[in-house]
View 1 (cartoon, rainbow, N blue to C red):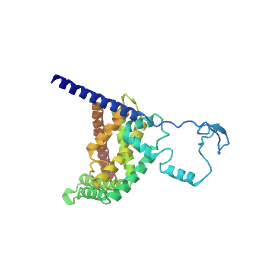
View 2 (cartoon, one colour; view 1 turned 120 degrees about the horizontal axis):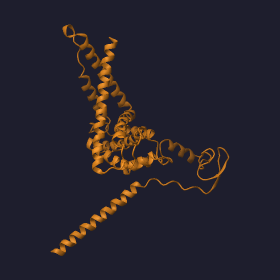
View 3 (cartoon, helix red, strand yellow; view 1 turned 90 degrees about the vertical axis):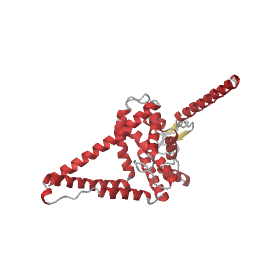
Length: 320
């Protein structure tokens, strides 16, 4: 019996060691970025400035050694580069944002940008792909959600009283609130048609929070606000890809309790995954900081809405 128990314990230890080694190899693979292209040993003559050089780019004007006369293949390659299928590959960038998002974002912020697609341009393209996917898979889902939200918002408008109950202060306040509701409805309609702009503004608030919450990061301490902004734009593109997967999996926009078509618990897990790799904190501390980021985002949104309401009321009072 004792021998059987020892054998069982030995097998468990061996299995644990194998899993640990596999996790270590996977983590090392995740940390490994895109390798730089080898230098060309061929002597080229730059077609732009006629400088003879050895390497991949002209040292005088910076033009690539691969520039040649226009052929059908060359023209097709240049056209595909506009859509992210050239050297700075959009699919490769998105793939890295899926399997090593925090490490890839860290590489980008540290200056290894040549292999990756520009973040803001990528967000617009991914958002366009999401809109196409949504219209193909569930063409009426998003319109219904936005329509229901607009109906609920319009129902909040308040009738302005006349007669004895129509003293100026009350009228100004109610009229200002109604103006705020109308303006909010117009902004919502604008964001419905321009989702990439909505994500940029929303993740700008995330950047304001993360620059504070993760200021003492073991991996990347004291990231500035601009760096946190670009980190959040890359995360936004990743979340749009996950949203497309959720739309396809559910045949419709099933979850709309956040900016994305995914459940909030999944959004939190993705952010936890990203922040753990990017900032280097332990799992529990990263989970706590991720929760603080979400709370901070909602607090900023609340303060902006309150400020907007107050401005609307004050503007109405001044103009009357």
